[in-house]
Image (cartoon, rainbow, N blue to C red; front, side, top):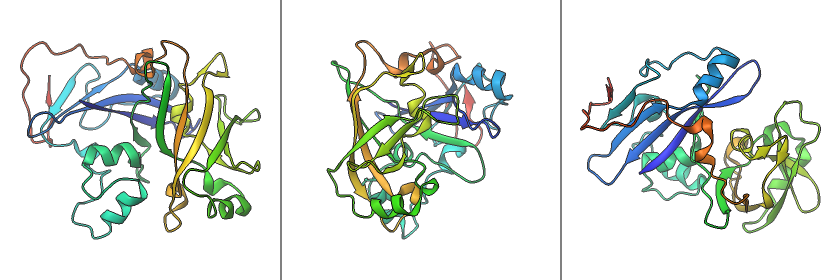
Length: 264
């Protein structure tokens, strides 16, 4: 089972809220997809008047399909496009990557809505983790920072620092080169879950350059492995905001084409 989370951004506050969970059971053919809302949707409703998503009108339901739901499928590049292999290469994937793997790396951002998709951060037994992602916010940095990324090499270690003067109420983590040049930030939707009482809970945190995509938009310029160690027993997926609202189904479920997903 592969799990991805759906996050929604409030236009006014720019805050990201995790609101849903997509599960893909690839052990069967065809793959069975299930979408359910998670408790973070209640935070989004209270803080920013979030409304249920078209196609998933009931917060208390689980939706199943043997096709990837349109909300997610529309965030995947069409397999017939000749530039798809190059697009996948920029994401650090091979040309045979499936739709769910592509979504996990691309985030599925679109200009037409406020959603993105991301995988959970999963730590090993001792709390150590590696999380692959794009460095965010490069387009907001000065030209010197953008030019500096062009000389970065795979394996180069980048430093991570909490931003003490962040305009947001939540913590921001800056990504800087070894010589101290601030080039971007870790994804905000990820960082929000790695703080406690306003402090950063990750030890031995760093980012390692995976690849630099000079021919890509700045949003996909710099791919890194974010590594570190979490406190004993900490699991992102155990946080209250990530718990499904709908109860587990205890009986066989129906499937649909994905145009009109069946509820469980």
